[in-house]
Length: 70
Image (tube, rainbow, N blue to C red):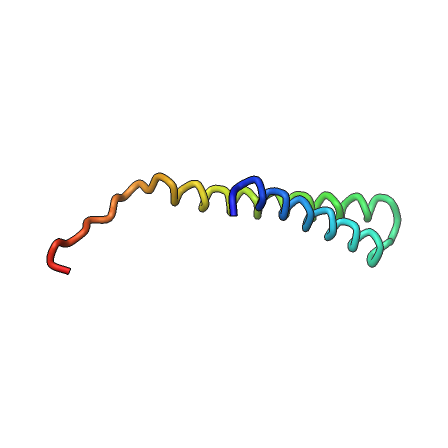
């Protein structure tokens, strides 16, 4: 999966989680705003962590040394 497909997956999961939190834990406008803000922050942080790991595999800092005997 490319970076764009996975970004769309994270966006869809974030929207779905925000919608579920608003429906299931409806305790007023300020609490709903807090829940949506926390879900959005967690989604962005997870996406950034995935993106950093994904991109780090393209250009590793340490190049593996291949042995010729194996």
